[in-house]
Amino acid sequence: MGAQLNIKSDEAYRLASRLAKLTGKSLTTVVTDALRENVERAERERDKATKIERVLALAADLRAHMTPPFSSSDPDEFYDHDGLPK
Image 1 (cartoon, rainbow, N blue to C red):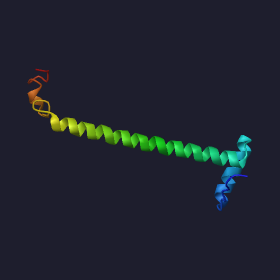
Image 2 (cartoon, helix red, strand yellow):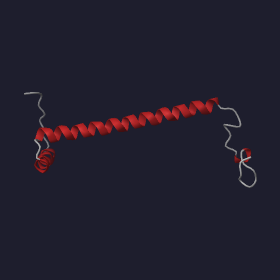
Image 3 (cartoon, rainbow, N blue to C red):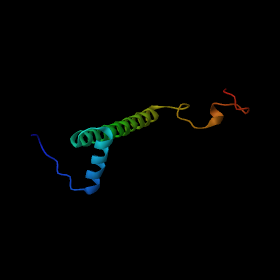
Image 4 (cartoon, rainbow, N blue to C red):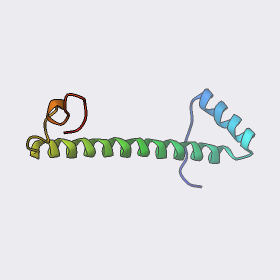
């Protein structure tokens, strides 16, 4: 027998038992599947946050190296009085 997990929560046991009954799977399988799904979700969220941080850092680096007119936020610099591009 492999490693063991002792669940001391009545609610956790009740939920796992209910899921096992609904799916026809063993308690071990439903607990393993639930843990795997949560780990994958947490990894996706962490990866998404990491990507966002990298994109924001890249954008900040690009802004730091831009020279006018590219760094300007003045709409008059790019558009005429009718709002059309110059």
